[in-house]
Length: 371
Image 1: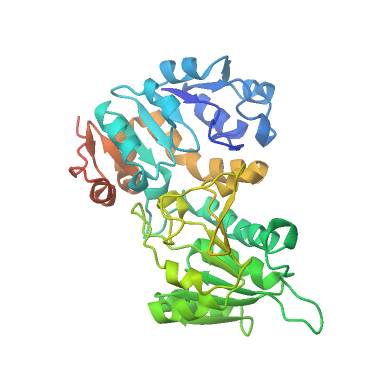
Image 2: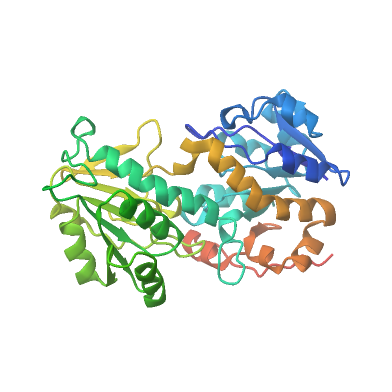
């Protein structure tokens, strides 16, 4: 199979889908890997390193897209890339289609087979989303701490405080992978930390990980409101795999927060998990907006800021399935790795992942890849 790796064009997206070691794995089985020149530079990977591993460097995104049978990238295609869609093309990337009807329409219209990293599920876990969730959770606290400072418009609070002065009050909504990563950093920085979730097992696990360091609360509207209004920093991490994120943080709650407080919405890729960030993603170039005196950080590609870490973590997770698809074809790869079936969001002109169909008002059709 010919695998194409274009340079990412999303604002300040410095990651690349593949590392040289993964190129070597793919090419040793007679697959061809085409990489757009300069695609790995921001991740510390040169064209020469890719060539030494067996890749072919090409001059333009157009050539990559048009020659490849499978496009292997990091973020969802932008409008400028829709013109390359065609029947039979396999797109292997983060898609987040539940909050992007336009992209869903284009994939269906052009009969693209679109495989979303974020919906591949193994044992009720998300192995291709997990590494970026771990990074996003850690970074959410870093970014939030930065925006709590006065030069960034915040309250002027040091997250960990000092002797005789209270540390910041950090509230984390969601105890999954992102929430655990955020808790780890917030606790490590010495903040007062409250974590909310409906999953009591997840709360118990966090409580055991950080005994006497955090407070855990069952997530219901009353507890969320009470926690949020007293927070200096809120990290919202709510996730329903492949579906639009629910808005658990309401505008009335935000109005009760202190001026200069900060909300970081890590669920913005799936549409946003607060009333005010819903459908309002920001970018690394313009990362925040202010509503009711509260700073909202809603960057849709948080891990892109630490590309030299993120690229390797992402490629380590996604290469296994890229190799299976390239070596065997999609049908055999899905038979070998059944978790891939839930990763296929569109196929042959239909939405084949039910939550996406529901959220984008499309007909759902069960995946049928029989030859």
